[in-house]
Length: 458
Ligand code: SF4
Image 1 (tube, rainbow, N blue to C red):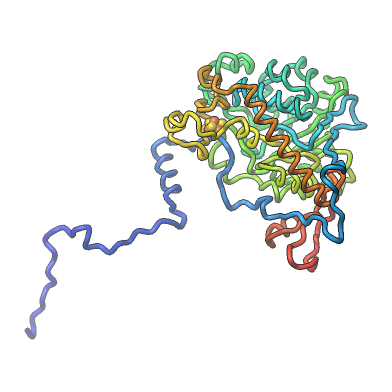
Image 2 (cartoon, protein in one colour):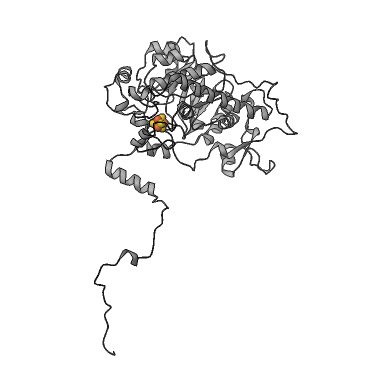
């Protein structure tokens, strides 16, 4: 009608849910996991702590490299009749009692406290059978670990928990820990349930109280203090055993140079995929450099100093099989450190006691609850009932089998590339599957027949 207006009618009832078009999209930065994480922080008022390693899937990895074994241009070694040696010696010609490893593998530092005594016994037994070393981790040298490990690396950490001059002299190598790959720049965490009577006594801490270790050495303000510390430790151990320094991979080239010039016998570096029994989750996922990207940098630092033969390079962080280890060696490592892999060989994630995984709110294969002290399979716990679930003899057999298989895998790649010693593998035995990995490692790309040559000297 002219001159009049019609007002739109407002609905008088609430619309039904079915009136809205379906609009339901997951993804982007607000994934269900990101939202759940915010809800948890909103409920708890603190960041989350968990065990194991980063669960990021976008890190570059050793899987992006492949070996280019022998053909007409190279001759492979015959598996049954031709030797492929594996021995690595740390400190040769530098100390009275070098550390002789029969294989280029070492078991990484994991403390008594983080691990149960049965896990420590099993790792010691397996390492001894394979002629390789185990490592105390933080918190001192447990007598059972010393008893079962023929080659024991003693960690010297900022906390000095359990450190005694008597134990220093019982060690086969000392490892000065500056930082670790899972949580570089921060100290260790041991939640109260794992601080049992024995752990508390070894660390001279109160029982049952959460423990956080310092992030740097109290008497150490910079790299200039390393030679002083080394001299003190060499004197305390009668110049008999090698000393290494361990750093989490960050500014790897500079750190390795400083350590080597400081006078160590070996540099240990730990990539960002390294595991732990407890770390802030955010630190696991957002700090440090992935192992594959750092190993070439570390080797290059030693080559540039002319110390590649003299100072050994030990690399850890997410090494899961002989292929990873062989690639790491080809990129310049002398030996690899493995931690998570041997924990899994012990029985971690094995679908036993499934109800106990469920009580922790998890399942085998996704469990990362080492920090709780309630490990269903008796590895990362101090509760006697749970510790008893890990039979040290059986667990040592599993770890020995795993170490044997891993050693054979490393030799398999070395033989197929025509190398008489696994440490003769080098970057020319590798090709990169992606431009990114080629750029990071200096290894030539596949399929380009050397038109994108290796930029790094191996
Ligand atoms: S099974 Fe035990 S060692 Fe393995 S992730 Fe779970 S709590 Fe840790």
